Length: 404
Image 1 (cartoon, one colour):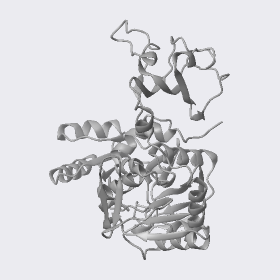
Image 2 (cartoon, rainbow, N blue to C red):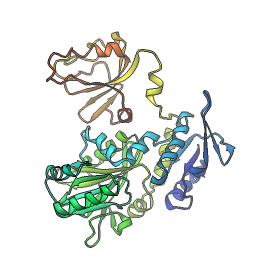
Image 3 (tube, one colour):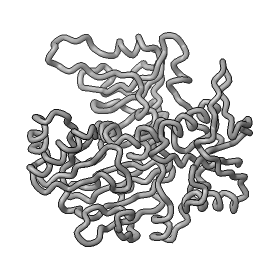
Image 4 (cartoon, rainbow, N blue to C red):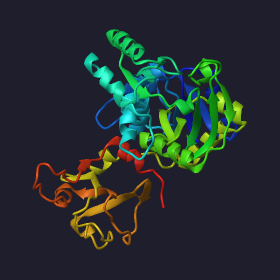
């Protein structure tokens, strides 16, 4: 395998470990400065130049895109995707996970625990929002902050209101989250590779500091996660469109709550704490997957006029309920079921004997008119119509979810 590590910091621990792990396994590996690429766009020929020279062929890339270069870095990754070069983390996944608000919006529609969060701009909405969170104390987060920077604990409502007013006057977008008291000063970092958690650690703040980030002086200890934490971490990463991710979770009374999904997680802390060869696991995973670069299904499956991919929410009253996929007659209508989601379980390429039940979600490809006909006509404006929607990037990512 010929792999390029996209990084602006060739001497940092993570980049050096990944490079060494690839070389030790006999792969050809180079570290390429992400900012030295030139993206060439011509009719039918997406291409790349590096340091003013035409880029040679690569089997795979491993993006290490820092927050400060997200826009250009993801543009480079997207160009590699257009050239059918394998990447474990998609450009869309990196962009989505980097946006704290958007990532929580996406996770909130899935069965994933997250801290109760609110996002407001008008000063008059601040106090009602804090009330909905259960009152102070609350956590205030700047959307662009990383490594614990821009995370503030407001002990009282008046303090929270003053902080929000100051930040908003400085044109900062901020989130307000319920303070999970039982998890004060500690969190879990689960390192996900593919469909499993390969290492995990608990980070604990020191002294009066409530932020557990190692960059803020927190200490780490290895931890064995139970099934609920492991499943939550893997699903959160996959919903974001990431196959390599650091998922940060709180240990709340209600179970795991995802705070953030990091698309370029550092290796030094997790490897030092656990003693595991995480870099080697990453390279081995990429070598296994390199023959199957992830495709943007929106580009590949919607080129035929009148065809598309939709996410159909099966509700009571639909003619599909209680029938197997074969009995539903979907195939005769030129509709193929790609995924069947039951609760938190995603069944890829489901068998025809699978029974469709109310509450299921069907990821289908076929004639759009035929799929629209599955939805009964709206009779009462007050009644919610069963949802049918064009495939979103997060739904595409979820196609790689847990199978059974």
